[in-house]
Image (cartoon, rainbow, N blue to C red; front, side):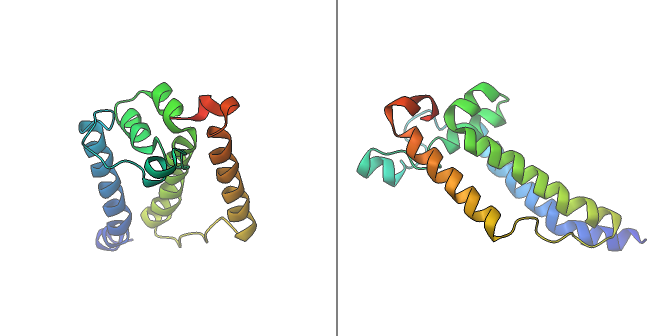
Amino acid sequence: MSTRGRAARLVAPLAALLAASAAFAFVGLVDPNEPGHYPVCPLLRFTGLYCPGCGGLRTAHAVATADLGAALSANAVAVLGFVAAGALWLRWVLPAWRGGPVPPWPLRAAHWWALGAAVAVFSVIRNLPFGAALAP
């Protein structure tokens, strides 16, 4: 296995890692808890309702600054999404490193529907009085 071939296979996954790392570094340095740095969620601004992503920037900031409690408090679903993205990245980069084919996408339509339903339920519950613990 040539080093040049491995390097070519790793360009895309490493570029994706660099882009994600740069985004996390930026959000880690520019605190979303301070007003004026980022735009307000349009759904929250116009309706007062939290969308599934509300608190996501605060979650990313907390992850970047290694505060897992604050990350889970701001948006637990985003934390799960970050973990899933890391797992999918490993599923992409390891076969590229070894020189084998990247396995097919693991989620089928039924999985996407279930994921969408879970996120919808999360969104509804976090906007109800008994779900206040899930609100950012």
